[in-house]
Structures are given as structure tokens and as C-alpha cells.
Image (cartoon, rainbow, N blue to C red; front, side, top):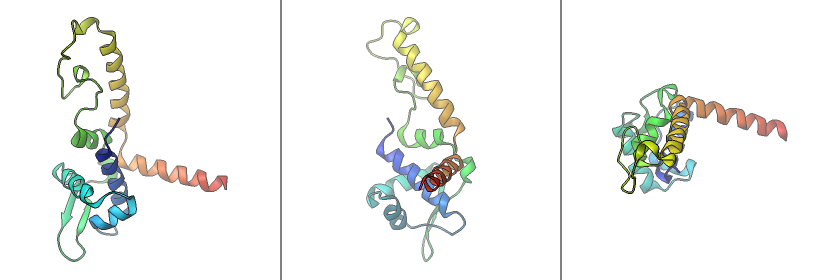
Length: 149
């Protein structure tokens, strides 16, 4: 499961991407639009800025804006930058590997092998999905919803 922090980070990124060329958005605007607690959002936006995904400007017309194009913001990067490992077990993590304390033999561990497959499938989706893809999916889903009415 992803953390609430990562989910809020993705919601904030979607809001900023939707805002596009309309300039920056303030923390308050994003917080109200996406129903994210303001204090929590401040921390999240700072993390995204440190990752090089966002930029901020101070003063009149200030706020946050995307430093990268939505097509270049890969979900795996966002998730790792906020939550760390994508793998559900430390012994299958590519970037944060740790041997499980109770493991007797990693080579023959069926649990480990199963979660390697889970990691690989999850990583494939997250590595191939961008912020632009999320926007397209939302647009498609909204169009279907309107059609059904």
C-alpha cells in the first residue's frame, strides 16, 4: 500500500499538471482543490522540490509549478522519492535490499519468489506510467461518466 503522503503527492502533481501554463499554484490553492491538509502538503511539496520535480517562486504570483513536463514525471520516481522502496519485502527490493531476519534460504524461499514477481509487475507499471498518462486516464474516465448520463 502506498502512504497517504505519496497519494497526496500524486494528487498535488495532477493539480499542478492540470494548471499547466496558467502559472504557479499556492499551497492553499492546491490544499483546497485536492482536500489535502495544508501543513502536510507543505512537507510534500518541499520533498518534490528536492527531487527536482517542482520549483517554487516567492512573492506576488508565487507558488509551486512543475519543473518537468508531465510526460517526464514517472510514477516510480515519485513513489521512491516519497516512500522509498517499491518492493513489499526488503529482501526483494532493488534499491533498498535487506536480508529478512528470519530467512533460512533466500534461494529456495517461495514467498520471496512470489514477491519478486509482484515487485516486477508493480515496477513495470509504475516505471511506464507518467503524470501525463494519469491526466489522460482521468479525461477518459470523465468522458465515459458524462456519456453514461
